[in-house]
Amino acid sequence: MSKVLVALFITISMIVNAQVSFTSWTNSYMQVNSYNGNNNPDAYTVTFAANGNLNMPYWKLSAKLKQPITSTDGQYTIPGNKISFQPISSTGQAYPNPTPSLAQIGVPPNVFLQENAEVFLVPQSNAPLYNMPATPNGYYNLQLKYGITIMGGAYLGTYPAWTRFAAPVEFTAYDQYNNVMGKISHTFEFHIANLTGTPPVTQEMSLKVNMNAANGLLEFNSMQDYNNGTSVVYPSGLQISTNTNFQIKVKSLQSHLLSNIGNYSIPVSAIHLSLQPLGQNNQTVFPITLSTASQTLAKGNVSQTTIYNYDIKYFTLPQDEQLINAKPTEYSTTLQYEITPQ
Image (tube, rainbow, N blue to C red; front, side, top):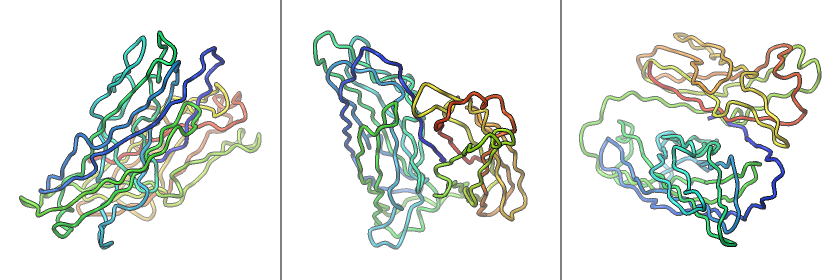
């Protein structure tokens, strides 16, 4: 997932936020006994805690694969996007209202790890960390539990039995200003046992936003950039691998690009996006205008495993009225790319 950081300015208030602590723990070991993969519904638990008055909207929680998922002997790797997190439960203690549910927070149902990039377990919470206790220093606690899944598939048969893998993941909590509230690393272990059953004939699909494009930056340096439009191209920014007909989609996780120094915003529809295939046929690309709806960027037809590479281009239109009154500062949103069968 290509991403840029998101921040909001909160208007002056008489409320002074309590200091929020960020802690987490794991059940990090998983054994894989079949080609169906496996799931641990109690893999990762994170806690936000504080004492006293608290009103923190738009907080975020990310996960970043710190290095490839490598076997202990260094001979094998598991692709990062074979591992995903699923929200299980939300519990806690607050006053006067209960802590928010997963639906109220707006938690994605399944988040795949991606090499070289942060992915967001909570992209931007729709519910604040909120506590107005009846007594001084009243306790607040929000606990989120996540499961972890290793995808099934014939690829599991490429590893010798009893190969052990380590996946070091760094979790980071951000406040509404994009300040880091806490950063904790955990290592998850996957132990490939003697696999039962027959290797399935499955659709194999993967997508990777390369390091050079993981943080997109579109700059306006002069009035000419507004008059003519501006653009940036990330060469070979996106790579996919697939053995079936595919479509690549993208959406913005927020409706506006938000400023990092004030309560300013720009509609995401001011930004346009296109993919440029690099020397491959049997596919069609579709330039799009960003929105919160998932839109198709490219489609292709294949019958055997094929790797496709794309340049990513972000651009604006000449004299776009959505940009003329924008205050000079940084604006940002989070994009989510996905590949699906068609």
